[in-house]
Image 1 (cartoon, rainbow, N blue to C red):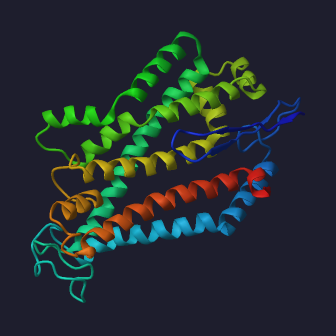
Image 2 (image 1 turned 90 degrees about the vertical axis):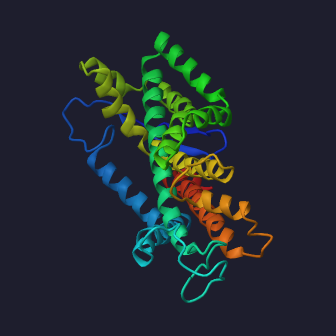
Image 3 (image 1 turned 60 degrees about the vertical axis):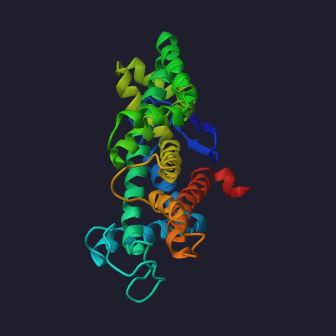
Length: 326
């Protein structure tokens, strides 16, 4: 029996390196039970225990998870503590933080904490929807192009390059001109449809490398369909890479949404952290010394995106033993 463990690394533009750990074991004369493609049961259990150990002892991952959990708790509990419309006028105008209004109020008497909690929920939803859609499109295009090759690969690669060079801001301006009302869902869909190309190109490169392995050849010789080979043989062997790619897309979607909201091209209804900062700037919160209006949403966006990227680095070290040894 021969054992191969190729390690392929990819660096998406603007993101930190992500690592794919793949394994493959050539077929044996006698049937050997397996719990994952290319791994014996003892190897799989040992690998999982190793990953779990370093995950529980990795400070980068633990700190990142703790930060995200705290923000998630605020997003869930906040609307319960401050029910009703977060944009309603409920208190004195421009009041600083107090026992009654923990984050103070805006120039119009709106509760900043209620807006912050609602904005966190919207931010997580946009990141999950936009990042999830981008990951789905990127993985589909990357797997099909990398595995099939030929003319189909050239067509998909051309489409990827076209989407990659489309000026997102100009496209959004055109879309905005034809939409009288924009919601968080529309924003998330737009982000997902425009932020997948780099993921597709990275996954395509990984698939090109894996499709020449012996266990993929064996699956093809056994009569397995292309979809079965992709989802049962190739995808599981780059699961860590796919997970890290999704984290980067999740954080990137949140950053894009916050940027669009801040320049006034975000949703026209509801609230988000980016919209809070846009309103704070529009109504001169900085000049009036109302720091409690713009600092919480700014720190919230920074904490979420920073925690996601630190988590990506920490998980990269966990999945790649060579980085732990360095």
